[in-house]
Image: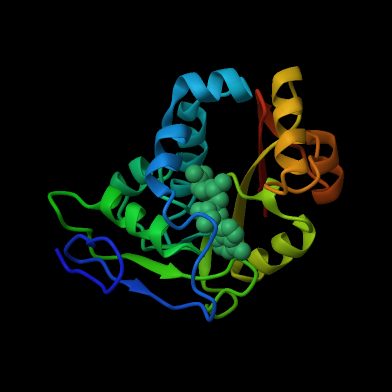
Length: 222
Ligand SMILES: C[S@@+](CC[C@H](N)C(=O)[O-])C[C@H]1O[C@@H](n2cnc3c(N)ncnc32)[C@H](O)[C@@H]1O
């Protein structure tokens, strides 16, 4: 394992490229806890009436939608996308603001202690990505939209990363059940998420249909 100063060990074949001026994120140091929560079927069922199996299914849909380069934005620990990446040979760039989350993603994607060639990890801000426009066939952004104040600004920036004919896949928590709505409102009051947006709000914003299971909404944009 290669080690980097001040961070946990990375698997063989993995480096974390990029650096942010004010490197560090609210998620640094919380990746392991985050993983346990987000992977928990009980937590997802009780809080969001949703199932991590659906999150993985949506990631698989994005990964199998094309064969050229794929960009994942705010990927966290790649908990939902990792199974699809393991089953694919697409070039993949996994990005997040948090180096800690990316380190966990790299460890998750390591097979036999090594990450396959073609998978890169880049510490980057979703609103200021360090890639040339038109680089990717697919952009995947899971469970991040509900943190964002201006979803249209984000979608414009992410769509710029797409080649002609490329597709953008978003998922977002939405207030769709009594418990989920109350929880999202609490998180919003605590400054953890943006103003909650319903599936209808998202459909109107993006001018497209929105699928939903429990409190997780799924959007695909061409
Ligand atoms: C709720 S987690 C979602 C992680 C992952 N996509 C998932 O579905 O499990 C939000 C992630 O967004 C990252 N993040 C927050 N602000 C960001 C930004 N401006 N640019 C890139 N990543 C950001 C956090 O570090 C965290 O990993």
